[in-house]
Amino acid sequence: MIELVDVHKRFGSLEVIKGISASVAAGEVVCIIGPSGSGKSTILRCINGLESYEAGTITVEGVKVDRDAPSITAVRTQVSMVFQRFNLFPHRTALENVVEGPIYVKREARDAAMEHGRQLLERVGLANKAGSYPHELSGGQQQRVAIARALAMRPKAILFDEPTSALDPELVGEVLAVMRLLAEDGMTMVVVTHEISFAREVADRVLFLDHGVIVEEGKAAEVLSAPKHARTQDFLRRVLRPI
Amino acid sequence: MDTFLRQSIEFLPILAQGLRLTVIVTIGSLALSTALGLVWALMRVSGNRWLAGFAKSVVNVIRGIPIIVQLFYIYFVLPDFGISLTALQAAIIGLGVAYSAYQSENFRAGIEAIDRGQLEAAQSIGMGWWLTMRRVILPQAFKIVLPPYGNIMIMMLKDSSQASTITVAELALQGKLIASSTFQNTTVFTLVAALYLCMSLPLIWIVGRLEQRFGRR
Image 1 (spheres, one colour):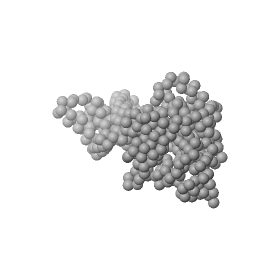
Image 2 (cartoon, chains in turn purple, orange):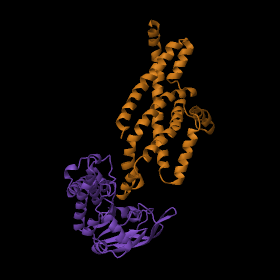
Image 3 (cartoon, rainbow over the protein chains, first blue to last red):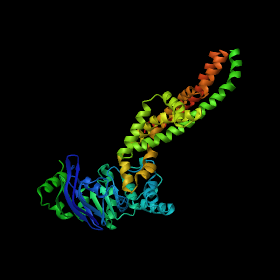
Image 4 (tube, rainbow over the protein chains, first blue to last red):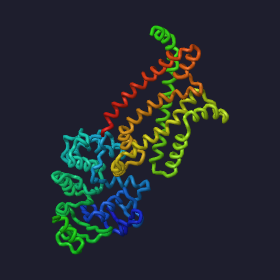
């Protein structure tokens, strides 16, 4: 359902994506790993038009992703995004954050949206935090609200941009648990992450990016346990045994 | 002291007429400058090069001309082009336009202070530019903008006295008229100053409270 064909992207004179082609099927969980600066977050942000790209094509369900075209709204309502730093709206409660898109973008009836919002908060384990403001929640709770906000759009896929990187270590588990739940329910997910064990356990496929190209890709178990490429081996060694 | 009180009772009703005009000019130009300032600020952050450039030029031209000259221009020059305004209308429009430049810079600073992640979160749930502004950016910018906005209010209250230069008989001009016909300069101008303080001190206090409440976050 997500198709990338020879995508190139540059920031000024620096080319950060150098011809990436990949596809994500419906119901698939794809993890993107790689060193910082490899372009993994950028490629994710290109998929829902937060970044533009110069060459190649990205399509979501056959619709070309073009951030300057009116069709971008349709793309974004189908592909939600979860950010590293949560980016919840600080002036709205957890529930208000969740129902903002359904009510104001999709124009759903207020009562129905609220009801759906409550169900989603319950699903991420925060039924009792509906009336709390983001600054009253821990990082892990904020990220789970952000996941509920993404789900509220009834998306066909969710993009996760290092969803646990800004969390204290003891809060990582609760967020990953929610993500695993989504994966089990068959949600299409593209996850940029450093959580190798999560990728091994939950991902169907892993892409290893370095310097703007896909160095290695394949089944999660194969890439993570028996990497073929030297750069993948080197990266995994450094992530798994930092000292 | 006795004479001061006696003269005060005599002058205050006349000064009250001026006070009324001062309040009308201040509130009128405050409303106009707020609306116009918001328009300039939104044009500046619209991402459209032409709109942003236009708004920037307008703001710079307005900032580069003294308020008094702008008032003269609107009251004395516009009639040559077939636009005749009453002195009060000219004062409100003149001060409103002049202050829209400062309002705009304040609003723009508030909008640009909002974390970029907020814009991206709004976009990621399919919000367009206008909806993002209305539902996400402006409500947050409001808190940042409020304390400086209070200061602008106080400055406008005092600058409303410039309307006297185009014959609006507001507080300052009314005082001058009484003083020049009675020669009771001390009494009259003490009263005028006291009346301005009666309005500005509460405003200053409110702004202080707002800064305490929103300033730290």
